[in-house]
Amino acid sequence: MKWVSLGTTRDGATFYDPAGAVRNGKRVQVSIRAVPESDTPISFIARVELDCEQPSLALISGQQFGADNEVVRSRTVPANQIERDPLFEGSEHAQLYRLICPKGPPLHKFKGPPIVVVPGEE
Image (cartoon, rainbow, N blue to C red; front, side):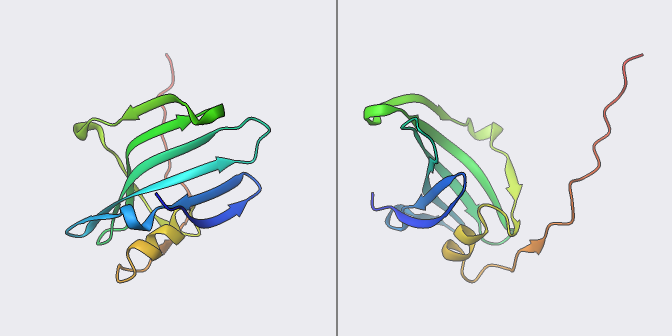
């Protein structure tokens, strides 16, 4: 894998592997890597799927690495449990969407979280 930087924030650096992108119609799977700003040598590699028609991102699998690059945790999401999160302008993965889906529709601005109603205990 050849990691290309998506940028750095106060939380750490994010990369993606453009050569490993696999297209299936309007959806593209790609690997991303997050390296947190931390004294502990850890990183996370995820396989995600971007929908270039209805801008969203789904986690397919992920691996957390510790010191010496050993896998300390690994998970593949069962196909029937994959959840798609909508992408918004300014969100963490907006730049990745624009790189992977250059002809996709523009991202909408985030207008705040949906109202969540939690039933009270009686």
